[in-house]
Image 1 (cartoon, one colour):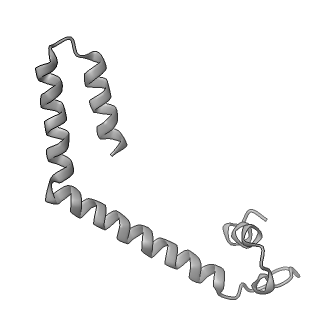
Image 2 (image 1 turned 180 degrees about the vertical axis):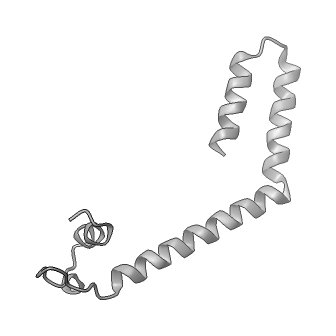
Amino acid sequence: MKLLAALAAGYVLGSRAGGDDLDDVVRSLRAIKDSDEFKDLLASLRSHAGHALRELASMLEGSAEPSDGEPELASTHDLVERVRHLAGLR
């Protein structure tokens, strides 16, 4: 979506043609936004994001195994600390 916006902005700013071309771009962007393919893309992105967030939630809710004498993080309520541990940033 950002790419389309950037392309449209570049076209508008770089265009030396009249307002008719700008109207064509606006109509084209609206047609893309209203297309079934774009709606399917958004639905897929939402589904993927939901799945990824559910996976992250289950990882954070699950018990983390202590390693190398570290205390078990399952009892820790500090979300940032648990994410750091899971990401190996600790």
